Every structure is written in structure tokens, then in C-alpha cells.
Amino acid sequence: MHKRLYIITGKGGVGKTIVSLALTKQLIAKGKKVLYNHFDQDPPSQLCAAMNIPVLKLEEDESLKTYVGKKLHSQNLGSWVVKVPFFHSLFNIIPGLKNLVILGHLIDMLNEDPELSIVLDSPSSGHVLTLFETPRNFKNIFKTGPLVEDIKKINKMTKDPNVLKIIILFLPTLMALNEGIELQTKIKTLDYSAPHLVMNNSFFHQLKNWHGLPEFLKQKLALEEKVVNWYEKDLGELKHPIPHIFEEKAKDIVAQITPYMENLL
Image (cartoon, rainbow, N blue to C red):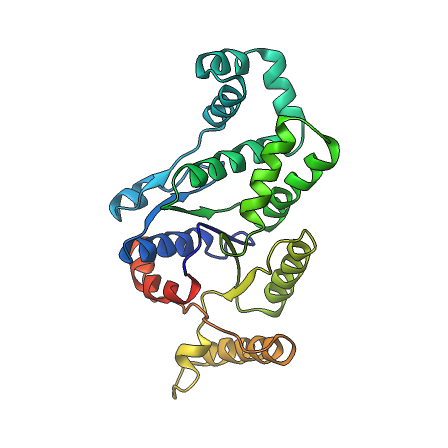
């Protein structure tokens, strides 16, 4: 059963965007209605257009106008309010409010369209933890009011394991694995379902039985084998690693790893 919201995270440079695009492509191939979102960053528009991947681009100001407009039951009034300098200053100085508004916008879209799924190419590990902490922090600050009601809606969706799937990518090194486990543990303490740890850019499962490999690849495989052995000793079977793809163009890499995404749905 596929989910409604997929959040792909991990350290910078781990391959979040490539995997997010491939996951979106796999959902499209299965006939699902899906949008790719890059949260508050500019999406790779040219790559998405070349691959016919539908993009949900949420501008910060537009999300804020939509949010305030819904609260005031008037988009025109909402547009006027967010232009007031004091309001904009307040929005910028309250930590996490931007995250809450954008996340709330995504949840509203999912509630309004039961057929829709969203793949969120999320910020890197440190920032995504702030994203997950935001609803709880604001709920503790504001005990009642419309913001609390919105937080309840967000929690209802994101705390449901049938709705949200969090995927933490890590490169095949012990340091990266430990960082992934640390992030997984922190997210679980916030009462979300356990994120899935997925090793990306792996040579080991492709080449471990090959003979006559150059020395640098032998060393690479030996290091990866330590990661796999450590993982399986403490965490169980390492499922569904994503292999290294011997291509240079992002479009070709996405195309080749897309079939591997079936295991992540």
C-alpha cells in the first residue's frame, strides 16, 4: 500500500533529490497521482521538465497568503495582511513558523484531494529535525486557538503510518550510518513511526562476487562490507540498498534507479 506523503531526508550530498525524483517516477508508473515538492528550496525545474515530473512549487509568500486567507475566509484580505511589515517581521523572527505554514499547506492539499500523494525532497538532517519538532513546539506554546487546530490536523496525518513514510538515506560509511541512526532515534522520540534507513550509492551488492577488480574498488567494497556487517549485527537485515549507477547525467541516473523504488513504496 503506497503512502500519501513521502519525506526523503539525510545528510547533504547523500542523493535525496535523485531518489525523490525516482520515487515520484515509480509512483507515476503505477498510475498514482503524485507531485514532487522541494519544500522551501528551488526545485530542479529543468530536470523535472525533461522527465515529465509534476512539480509542486510552494513559494513562502504564497503559502503564507493561502494560510492567512483561509483563517480570515478571504484570500484578498489574507494577501493584504501578509504585506504589512509588522506581520512579515513577526513571521520571520518566530523560529519554525515558516515550516509550520508550508507543512500545513501540504497537509491541506492532501486532505482536499484523497487521490494525491506528495514526495517531499526535504531539507538535510538538521533542518528536517526542526521540521518534525515544529508542530510539538507550537502546540506547547499555544494551548488553544486556530493554530492549535491546524497542528492537530498536521499531527493526525503525519503520525499515521498509513499516511507518512520517512526515508533516511545514508552513504555506505560507518559515520554516515551512525548519523542516520541518530536521526532515526530523534524522530522516533517525537512519536513518529520509525523512519526507514536506506543505503544509497552502494557498490557492495553489485560487485561483491566480481573477480579482478582494481585495488581501489576492492578497498571500497571492504569498507562497505564492514558497514553491512555492522548494520546486520545490530539492526537486522539491510534491506533494499540503492546501487551506484555508472552514469553521469542526472536524468539517466534517475531512470536507472526508478525500478528500485518499488521496494520503498
